[in-house]
Each structure stands twice: as structure tokens, then as C-alpha cells.
Image 1 (cartoon, chains in turn cyan, blue):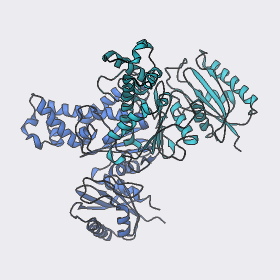
Image 2 (cartoon, helix red, strand yellow; image 1 turned 135 degrees about the vertical axis):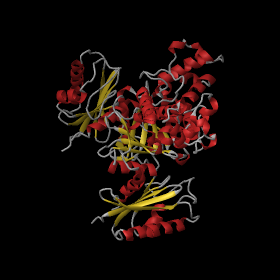
Image 3 (cartoon, helix red, strand yellow; image 1 turned 60 degrees about the vertical axis):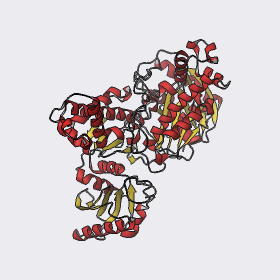
Length: 319
Length: 319
């Protein structure tokens, strides 16, 4: 018989958040540890085990865990390995699923963080009932989780859905963290917005509240703060960002013709500042047979819980 | 009990080819009619019925047909309709599956031509045993059929897989038949190759065998004929074409991480002239986690049979 809870773990470069989740998607309890404290992966796993065990004991969940799901950077669903992770302090490949399964005595399923978010959205969020949608996560980077026919697209090797690395500028494109130039992520991540701000401030001469901030310290949050004070340049930064994202979504539509694009992450808090140019560029660039079809909507997941919930949904896949 | 044959119909703008196919993928007999002869769709259906009935009678296949599959431009798998077809003489939408089913008394399934080719390749060709691959058809236009997890990607509306209309040049892009600019199809179709030839001949001053042909009459076949005579400019036209296609495939890989890209259609007859720059550009542009993984290969379908076989494979889906 299936047990009543699963554990969801969201492993980020800085923090690892985790929670105990019931079958209705309620986060019973959650906590977190620092990811990068230990130079030995086994010490990290040991601390994670200790912290989660404590959480289970406090919530009468010991021996009631059906499975563990982890969303991890570059995590591979098929192998359970992290194969390449520039933001983590350990040598790759890391046999993450195996390490967790051995330590906890509970089966563990791994995928990347954006796929976990897509699963969460399909199970508990804005994509309930949808069989074809594309989740775009707009954070420090740009990630994606693609669902076709009700199934996450993992590809032949488990690494499909890297839409943050589609090339949007083939000439004079910005350097991307992946080593190439012109990637969507270099423009439409929080970091990309800050880079656009620095470029605009350097090239242009018009006044802006942004000029009051030391140029190297400008964040996407600063751009937002200025934009809502009606700062023209700050608003144009959002227009520029949203236009590139809208053009990208129009291209993505030709691939899997989703019912919806679901946007998730820090940048979506800017609301219409980003959504308006996204939708305008999308409508302007979409192939006629797709016009007016796909919705572009915001995630319905509470951000604090989303990653944990998404990862936890994988825990139910354990047989 | 399943009947021993299916009928595959490949409906093009000029010709409609059709054949009787057995369960092993042998084309028992085939023929064709002109597509655009009749201004009334019902007259076209009547002529098609007459021609196929004659073929069935000649081959002892009457009452032995399990189903009919049609690959048609902009054919929708879900509705059986052709919703928008600039190359056909009839008003859309056309309820094609219904018209055929009613006339023949046999269930009919419709999809677009590139999806039909992908199904054919998966059932009988280079993609046998593959669960994740992308078929790219390089003909008068550029089409695609995407298979994820062993299933054709139809999308929420049945029109997914229009990769010929991904934007490859966002500034100063060529006009495409779809009304937008910069589409892959405007560069990597047979027509695109001819356009590149005209552009190169106009802009450049170096000698070329292509200058002996009236510039408005140059076809991709002419470019090929000159290239195999070691004409430098003609070879550069293939380099230019192949480079754009390779860049596009590298982007497509981020979506579904296929085991293989399968290229199909007239342009692939140019062999290494096109394949070498495609592979070079792909390797140069691919995201590191995908490097060295996906194969780029040629279709194994005999071209004359491919479209009929691909469409016919749909006929077996009929219950």
C-alpha cells in the first residue's frame, strides 16, 4: 500500500530546501540547510539526512514516506546523476539518487529543478488538467520544463528542456554562463535584466533613477523599483527583456504547440511590466496557425513551496 | 480481426500519390492523380476514390483495408481537417478525414506530411527502435515531425512541429511564405538555396559556373550540379545553407534532446555538400551537455515510397 507522505528536496547552489508533503499537495513541514557548506558530498548527504529525519520525527512521519523527489541543477531523471554542475562544490558526476536512496532507505527520483517545477505545476498549479504546456523559470538563470502528452520531455539522455540556451542573438550576442553567446538566459534571467540595465545606462544619455545606484550593484529588483516609479529607462529595460522572451516563446510554440506557457520565478513578480511586452512580442511573432491559441500565464504555485512541491510530486512515481 | 492492408495517401500541392501497403511495409501497388484539377473538393475525392478502387481491384485488396492514412499540408491529426492550405485550390477548413471515410466506408486518419514521414521513418526506416528523434524534411519548404517518448508531438491543437518556421535571422531576414521574415524555411529549403544563389551572385563578383544560367531560373539542382564540378561559389552556397541548418538543429536539441536528427527530402541528395557544414555548425553551436550525443543522419526511406508508407502507417491506428 502506498504510504501517506513524500519528501520533496529542492537543491540549489546556495540552499537546499526540503519538505514533507501529503497526497493533496499540502506541505506538512519544511526546512532547509546550506548546500555548499561541505566539501565532501557524503557530509552534505549526512547533514541532509539528519535534518530530514528530525523533521520526520517532529511530524510523526517516520516510516510513512513513499518516495523522495529531488530537483537538482542538471539532475538526470534516467540515471539519477548530476552530471555537470558549475554551481555546486563537488566533483561530478554525482550519483545523487543512489546516495539518497542508500542513506534514507527510501527510493529517490532525481530531475532538474525546472522539470520539477513543471511537474509541480501540473500536479498542483496552473497546469492542472493540461497535457501540453511549457514552463519557463525566470530566476538567476532561465530554465524550462516541457510537458507533451501529459509527460515531461526528458529526451533520449534525460537532459531535454534547456530552452534558456536557445540562441536569440546570433551576432554580437552576450556571453552566457554556458560558454556560448546570445542565449535566452543571457537576456531574460534576473542577471540578464541587470546586464541590460548596465548596457542601457552606458550607451544612453537620458536621465534615470537607476543612475543613482552604483552601476555594478544594480539588480533586477532595482530596475523593478525604478520602473514602478515610472522611470522611462527602467520600463524600457523590461520592454527589451519581455520582447526577447516573447519572440522566444513564439519559436517554442512551433515545436510543441502548447496549451499554455507558464512563467515562474522572481522576474514574474514584475507583473505587467514584463508580461505586456512578452505578450505583444509573442502575438507579433507567432506563426499564423498558432495565433490566439496558447495562453501565457503566471505560475499558481506559492514560490516558497513550489520547488519542494514539484520535487515531491516525483516521490509518488516510486513503485 | 485486423485486415491485411492499409492505404497511404500523400497529398501534395501538385500530385496526390497513394498506395496499398502490407503490414511489413511493402508497397503492393501505387499510383497518383493530379491534386489541383478540380475546383470542387468533392470531385477530387470522387476521382481519388475511383483511382484507389481500381488499384484495389487490380490487386485483390477490396474489403481488405484496415484503414486509410493521409499526409496532407496542414492536416490536423485531432480533427481530421485541413485548416489552412495556401497551396491547395479549395476553401478551408476541409473536413478531409470525414470526406474520405464517408466515400470509402473505411476509417481515415489525417496528419501533416512531415509527421507522416516521421511515422514512416519510425515504423520502417532509420528511426526504427528510437523513442526520441526529430525528422526534418527539406523540400520546397522545410517541415518537421517530432517524436518524443515514441509518440509524434501533435501539441494541444494538432499543429505542433512547424520547425521550418523558427526564426533564424531576426534582423534583415528573408521574407518567408508564411508572411514573416527570417524563417529557417526561407534559407534551408530548395527554394531557399536558389534564393541564396541569386543573392550571392548579385553581391559577389567572383566567377562561377552559375553565372552561365539565367539568374531567375537557377534551382537548387543547378547549385548542386555546379558544386560537384568544384565550383567555389556553389559550394559556399551549400556551406551557408548547411551552417544555418546546423545552428537550428543545435537549438532544437535543447528542446527534446533527440537520439537523432533525420534529414529527408531533395536537398539531402547533395550528400556531404550539405551534411558536412550541417554537422560542423551543429558541433560548434551545441550546448556542452549535448555535445557528441545526437546523430545527424539521412532518411532510409526510398523517396518515392516514403510519403505513402509514412501516411499508410497511420492506417494501422484505426481501431
